[in-house]
Image (cartoon, rainbow over all chains, first blue to last red; front, side, top):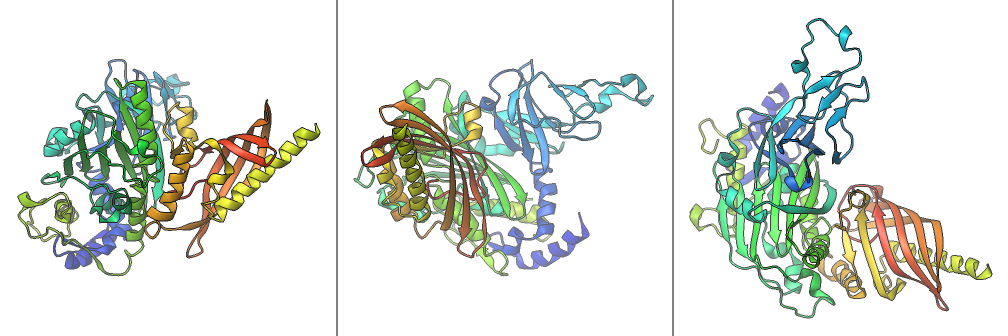
Length: 396
Length: 159
């Protein structure tokens, strides 16, 4: 913990009296951001970094980032998914620069060191002249912990992270619903965007917000159905479970085909996994939003869309049309969310608070889908984990 | 040969008019640049290289193009943060497919300026268009925008 942070922590703690009233500097302070990387991104949490559908065959790999740490994921000959820091164990060059591909081995271009896709050191030119105590096993790629749920691949750098099922808690089941239970998904592509927003401002406003934001709902005469809300403790994962409502054509659109529901699985789900991943199953779309902080006020989100391996070609084509237009960063509906992340971030230096009111004070088991109280489980956890809450507070 | 050059001039006028209309945000005129049967899509080069069919915007009929105008004009206005764009378009390849239809490629750079005057590069990439040239000029049968970069903000307007 840096001295910079300790000074900030004391000041913020004085203003952060309850998890329903957020001092806005938590979204804009550089020292807080650096500390969050250590405590959340490199700390005892699990981070979704890929779905198995992105590693379609043995030998497949994907490169990505855990905050500022480059990561390479591989699917090895024994069909296990492994994760390593994507850095040569010799002098630290980025080992693989392609986004994805198939490779049994990775060769560093700098001194031609060679690694297997299981992370092991295979060999290097001039090996005989290496220092006399050179031990090959000391030069494997640095592994990350890997766990999987319904095909979703999670990594953690921290040996103290609980097992994945304990981490997910009651969010495990809605999450599997999003992955169509068996997790046999088929990747249909990515929409990437950079938001001018802190990572917490992004996730706090993405999976849950009141439908009031969406003019599209009003104009399309599209009413949400009553949903079930699940929040977990201590992490504050949040899940909204509801049934897909068929769109009734009111003549607003010239062609409503892209927003019609053609499937048979009418479970709609919105899941926010802490610290920063949103997952949705809505109409015929399946979407995992892999987010990565790029600094205190920038967040890159890679919206990955999927179908199922058993989809007919016609149904898959419909999924592509719908996924392309509805819930990505420029989607009919979600573009309005995108605007809010930026607009929230723009006011974070005014010394004020972001406040939660709807549903606050009601017993937890009476929170409904549209009660913003549901976000505050996470904020209680965050406040404790960052040392902003008085010693001995709950939800640590 | 005269006809080919005349057709090229009509194609360049269409590309120029396209920039004028989208940068001028004259969205009612945007569909009029397309033929009756038409297709507009914005795709990322990353997806294309991986053979992935997802698009950023996918309007595979005139109705969908008209609906996009409705969203820009009626649904999102007031919520999204508007920006001004400036398209720079350079035709790089023109192939005669016969019957007055051309396969045209062009590079584009799109700069953007926010309300507070800050500016940057929004998008870079290339167009792959099918353009029909007739008596009254040229129209897009199909326009696919291949995006090279991850946009530094969410895209509101067609590129």
